[in-house]
Amino acid sequence: MATTGSLKQLSSTGTLSHNRLSSVGSGPLRTETGSLSGLKIPSVQRFEGMAELLEPPTSLDDIDLKQNMITDIMLRLTYNEGEVSVSRAEEVMKLPYRVMDELLQWLQQEHLVEVAKAVGSLGRRGYVYTLTEGGRNRAKEALERTLYVGPAPIPLEKYNKAILLQ
Image 1 (spheres, rainbow, N blue to C red):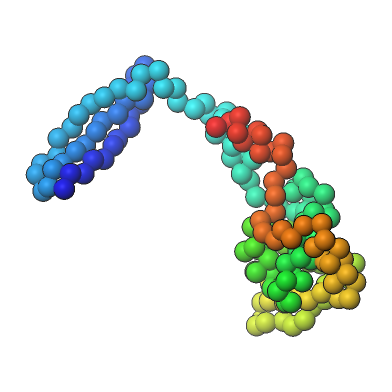
Image 2 (image 1 turned 90 degrees about the horizontal axis):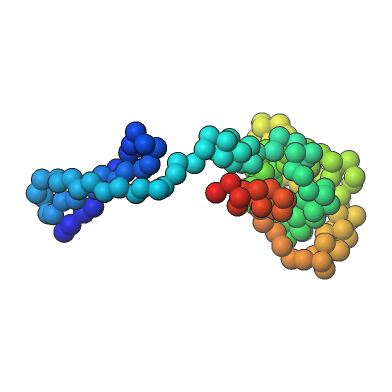
Protein backbone atom coordinates (compact mmCIF):
# COMPACT_ATOMS: atom_id res chain seq x y z
CA MET A 1 0.00 0.00 0.00
CA ALA A 2 1.47 3.36 -1.01
CA THR A 3 1.23 6.39 1.24
CA THR A 4 1.97 9.97 0.41
CA GLY A 5 2.53 12.86 2.78
CA SER A 6 3.37 16.46 2.11
CA LEU A 7 5.53 19.10 3.73
CA LYS A 8 5.25 22.73 2.71
CA GLN A 9 8.22 25.04 3.11
CA LEU A 10 8.70 28.72 2.50
CA SER A 11 11.56 29.42 0.12
CA SER A 12 13.76 32.50 0.29
CA THR A 13 11.80 34.03 -2.61
CA GLY A 14 8.53 33.98 -0.66
CA THR A 15 6.96 31.16 -2.68
CA LEU A 16 5.76 27.92 -1.22
CA SER A 17 7.65 24.78 -2.09
CA HIS A 18 6.36 21.30 -1.66
CA ASN A 19 8.39 18.34 -0.40
CA ARG A 20 6.50 15.15 -1.12
CA LEU A 21 7.22 12.14 1.04
CA SER A 22 6.18 8.82 -0.38
CA SER A 23 6.65 5.25 0.69
CA VAL A 24 5.63 1.94 -0.73
CA GLY A 25 4.79 -0.75 1.78
CA SER A 26 7.29 -0.70 4.63
CA GLY A 27 10.20 0.50 2.48
CA PRO A 28 12.22 3.64 3.11
CA LEU A 29 10.78 7.11 2.51
CA ARG A 30 11.97 8.99 -0.53
CA THR A 31 11.58 12.71 -1.10
CA GLU A 32 10.45 14.38 -4.29
CA THR A 33 10.74 18.17 -4.41
CA GLY A 34 8.25 20.24 -6.34
CA SER A 35 7.55 23.93 -6.46
CA LEU A 36 4.34 25.87 -6.32
CA SER A 37 5.80 29.00 -7.83
CA GLY A 38 3.58 32.02 -7.92
CA LEU A 39 1.65 30.97 -4.83
CA LYS A 40 1.64 33.91 -2.45
CA ILE A 41 1.54 33.51 1.29
CA PRO A 42 -1.47 35.26 2.89
CA SER A 43 -0.55 38.56 4.48
CA VAL A 44 -0.54 39.08 8.21
CA GLN A 45 -3.32 41.66 7.78
CA ARG A 46 -5.57 38.99 6.27
CA PHE A 47 -5.01 36.69 9.24
CA GLU A 48 -5.58 39.55 11.69
CA GLY A 49 -8.77 40.54 9.85
CA MET A 50 -10.05 36.96 9.95
CA ALA A 51 -9.17 36.63 13.65
CA GLU A 52 -11.18 39.77 14.37
CA LEU A 53 -14.18 38.34 12.50
CA LEU A 54 -13.96 35.03 14.35
CA GLU A 55 -13.75 36.60 17.80
CA PRO A 56 -16.77 35.39 19.78
CA PRO A 57 -19.21 38.01 21.05
CA THR A 58 -19.06 38.90 24.74
CA SER A 59 -22.46 40.62 24.95
CA LEU A 60 -25.70 40.98 22.99
CA ASP A 61 -24.40 44.30 21.64
CA ASP A 62 -21.44 42.48 20.00
CA ILE A 63 -23.73 40.31 17.88
CA ASP A 64 -24.53 43.08 15.37
CA LEU A 65 -28.02 41.71 14.73
CA LYS A 66 -31.42 42.95 15.73
CA GLN A 67 -32.12 41.58 19.18
CA ASN A 68 -35.54 40.29 18.10
CA MET A 69 -33.83 37.88 15.69
CA ILE A 70 -31.84 36.27 18.53
CA THR A 71 -34.84 36.51 20.87
CA ASP A 72 -37.08 34.73 18.37
CA ILE A 73 -34.60 31.86 17.93
CA MET A 74 -34.44 31.42 21.71
CA LEU A 75 -38.24 31.54 22.05
CA ARG A 76 -38.72 28.99 19.23
CA LEU A 77 -36.12 26.70 20.84
CA THR A 78 -37.81 26.90 24.24
CA TYR A 79 -41.27 26.41 22.67
CA ASN A 80 -40.09 23.30 20.78
CA GLU A 81 -38.29 21.74 23.74
CA GLY A 82 -40.54 22.86 26.62
CA GLU A 83 -37.62 23.57 28.95
CA VAL A 84 -34.15 24.78 28.00
CA SER A 85 -31.00 25.05 30.09
CA VAL A 86 -28.42 27.74 29.43
CA SER A 87 -25.95 25.08 28.26
CA ARG A 88 -28.53 23.69 25.80
CA ALA A 89 -29.13 27.20 24.44
CA GLU A 90 -25.34 27.67 24.06
CA GLU A 91 -25.09 24.36 22.21
CA VAL A 92 -27.91 25.11 19.77
CA MET A 93 -27.33 28.81 19.14
CA LYS A 94 -23.50 28.60 19.20
CA LEU A 95 -23.20 31.67 21.41
CA PRO A 96 -21.06 31.88 24.57
CA TYR A 97 -22.52 31.51 28.05
CA ARG A 98 -22.20 35.22 28.84
CA VAL A 99 -24.32 36.18 25.83
CA MET A 100 -26.94 33.49 26.46
CA ASP A 101 -27.18 34.44 30.13
CA GLU A 102 -27.64 38.11 29.20
CA LEU A 103 -30.36 37.18 26.69
CA LEU A 104 -32.19 34.94 29.16
CA GLN A 105 -32.03 37.61 31.89
CA TRP A 106 -33.57 40.10 29.45
CA LEU A 107 -36.27 37.60 28.43
CA GLN A 108 -37.00 37.03 32.11
CA GLN A 109 -37.31 40.79 32.76
CA GLU A 110 -39.71 41.01 29.81
CA HIS A 111 -41.77 38.17 31.34
CA LEU A 112 -41.25 35.92 28.30
CA VAL A 113 -39.40 33.15 30.17
CA GLU A 114 -39.18 32.05 33.78
CA VAL A 115 -36.93 29.71 35.71
CA ALA A 116 -38.58 26.28 35.81
CA LYS A 117 -35.90 24.79 38.07
CA ALA A 118 -32.28 25.08 39.11
CA VAL A 119 -30.07 22.04 38.57
CA GLY A 120 -27.11 21.47 40.88
CA SER A 121 -25.22 24.25 42.60
CA LEU A 122 -24.10 26.05 39.45
CA GLY A 123 -25.93 29.30 40.14
CA ARG A 124 -27.45 30.86 37.01
CA ARG A 125 -25.59 28.32 34.84
CA GLY A 126 -27.81 25.61 36.32
CA TYR A 127 -31.11 27.35 35.55
CA VAL A 128 -33.61 25.65 33.28
CA TYR A 129 -36.08 28.02 31.61
CA THR A 130 -39.61 27.64 30.33
CA LEU A 131 -41.91 30.06 28.52
CA THR A 132 -44.49 32.19 30.25
CA GLU A 133 -47.90 32.61 28.60
CA GLY A 134 -46.63 35.81 26.94
CA GLY A 135 -43.52 33.93 25.82
CA ARG A 136 -45.61 31.14 24.27
CA ASN A 137 -47.68 33.71 22.36
CA ARG A 138 -44.55 35.46 21.11
CA ALA A 139 -42.96 32.10 20.20
CA LYS A 140 -46.05 31.14 18.15
CA GLU A 141 -45.79 34.45 16.27
CA ALA A 142 -42.09 33.79 15.66
CA LEU A 143 -42.89 30.27 14.41
CA GLU A 144 -45.37 31.73 11.90
CA ARG A 145 -42.50 33.75 10.39
CA THR A 146 -39.99 30.89 10.29
CA LEU A 147 -39.38 27.50 11.87
CA TYR A 148 -35.63 28.07 12.10
CA VAL A 149 -33.95 27.00 15.32
CA GLY A 150 -30.17 26.77 15.25
CA PRO A 151 -26.95 28.76 15.30
CA ALA A 152 -27.39 32.51 15.54
CA PRO A 153 -26.72 33.96 12.09
CA ILE A 154 -23.82 36.28 11.44
CA PRO A 155 -24.42 39.65 9.79
CA LEU A 156 -24.12 39.62 5.99
CA GLU A 157 -21.43 42.31 6.19
CA LYS A 158 -19.19 40.03 8.32
CA TYR A 159 -19.83 37.08 6.01
CA ASN A 160 -18.87 39.11 2.94
CA LYS A 161 -15.72 40.37 4.67
CA ALA A 162 -14.74 36.79 5.57
CA ILE A 163 -15.15 35.73 1.93
CA LEU A 164 -12.97 38.61 0.74
CA LEU A 165 -10.25 37.75 3.28
CA GLN A 166 -9.96 34.14 2.09
